[in-house]
Length: 458
Image (cartoon, rainbow, N blue to C red):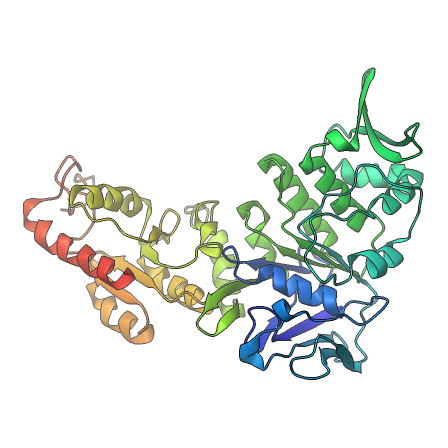
């Protein structure tokens, strides 16, 4: 199994970057490594690096477009396995497309990579290929990223022979399982046929989601413990309910296999797996090229603790998971009321922020340090925290601890005005008694605060 991957000089990686992979320990999700980040941040390049160093008939060539001039016009990719052995693939010379294995000791024969482009020619010839041979000969490291995997038909013949086993896995995601078979056209070509009642249609008319699932199930159903399965964007063309079921299936496989996925979907961010050893790495662009930022055990423990809080289940809910996909500019506020009413206030004072409030708040002011630390570990450069007046004492230390971020407090003890309750005194907020508009006395200070926030993000 892969423990670490080092990349230098491949596409946007102008400086060496490292990612550490989760190692399965028998618990569901323990072997899951999640690659997140905005579009064009470098996630697919990490998967490309794994493809390059995987076994193939000949050593790969690094074309001009794949070599980063800032790193010396040369590429170096190195993996270490869980036994401490390493394999390094590097350019023979700067400016050359050719490569050689500098060290070749790490286990690589159990790596199976699925690119994001999972289409195939709907008509194919009869040619059956086992899992390892297919990976070595047809996935590999082509000179250009291709739009289809036209040799996938060679895997379908084996799947049909093992249809019960294949369908058992497919049925975990699709219910009912489509009635499928391989058929031959009168022209001699073979095709994947889907049958329903008395009608049928060929793979030419198959939805992209079904095609993608056939690829993914093929990667899983013959895999063995300790295998490494890498999937680029498993969510493509899949309905959210199917994504959820697929995510659950991958979590189960990750108990004794390494599952590495690059995703833009919050449905694949199962943060409960962090307590078992899963890991999250955010890939993002800076002036220094592609950067990999990975969350620490401290942040893992914090997220796990928050998830146990049944009074604030939304703190890391579906909305909050956007933290892993945002490009930059995040605003941290205490709770869901703040998110709702600050947006109303921004409309009232006519301030438009080029920033996003995180989810439905951070579950209380006491969590702000942990969230700021998490965002810092994930490589965010622009973050603002806004607290109530009764937390004013925290502002100075927060600005000292996170000098790259900005922290402010409003001039009221809450964003909204709360009526007095039994054993609870009335709280006068920024908004009037009906929580409709800003109190006049807070208008200027609130404008000033958000003008500072806007200026910071701009």
